[in-house]
Length: 353
Image (cartoon, rainbow, N blue to C red; front, side):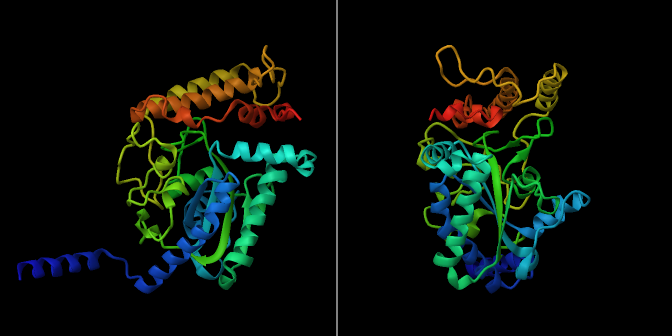
């Protein structure tokens, strides 16, 4: 009897704290989100897009857009309203070998004025999502809006770093304006958001990854989510053999749909700002001097200008490592030298055709 009383009390307590949302609708939205991610995840990862972060469109509109209404326009909400499903898509260092191989093999990419953005990212993501809706999930009959980070149309601009900050994917460093991820540090890039005419699980009901337990092999698919119900960047640990050498802080306040937390001490902000001020003071701006594209041995090398900005990025990574007490932890995710040279100097010599 005592057990029964405690159980009834627990049920009453849980009910009191639950939002008055239709439970069937919540379960349906969870299954839809999981179904989409299961269907599209392998293709995205195979193309180098290993950051896949679901969020309800209303969360972006109510936080990021509301804070800057003159520069940003709200994302479309389709039939699901504020709970319309959107995916923030990006990459770690895994994109470079995929893109490099495609560049070598594809004349159209080589002839493109912007090989990475217009020659690879945009066609690849467009193909993947149209295939998702026309072949894998035709029954959903969903509308699609893909918005890319390289777009310049004022009506389609998306504040990607602020979006990542508000949804709990990565913290926005106030000094450098770089996104900082618990596992990847500053070594990540955003490529697009995909808005689907489907219902995303609501923010109130999904503070933990338990929402997505329906996902198959999720731990090797998605950065930032953990099937155990914690929200840390431990999702790829099993695939990358880091389990024995790292223990990220398990802070339950890192929650999906909640703003990301600090990943370094407050003193780091002024330290990083000082470094940036020194770079700006001597007139260095990335991507203007490409004379250093080869070192004395003929290998790829950053120009003097770009090296200064890469050093700042490395400083951010170092601050994260010290704060988490994990020496050289994020350096394992630093972009390779060819990736850095192309990213900062836009030098195509790295492809050595």
